[in-house]
Length: 107
Image (cartoon, rainbow, N blue to C red; front, top):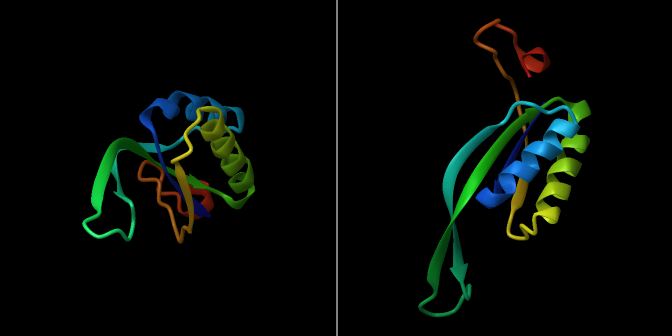
């Protein structure tokens, strides 16, 4: 199991959701965040800029990892969201509260 984290522009969300639906990924968590970036990194007196962003969290089983990443990447490119970032992390366990399922069955 993997946890995909992505930080993207809020305007990209509809395109991302459509792309994920095409690869049969229907569950994700969206959070409003602010993305902070140093301008002129390493320069004396550097300043930090921030912009509104969304954080996406998508838990997937191994068989869904590549299709999900491909769909997410394609949607972000088509949206022109060049500042977006995607991270992939190992996911040790997942528990669905309603059914008590663990692991891959919970996703």
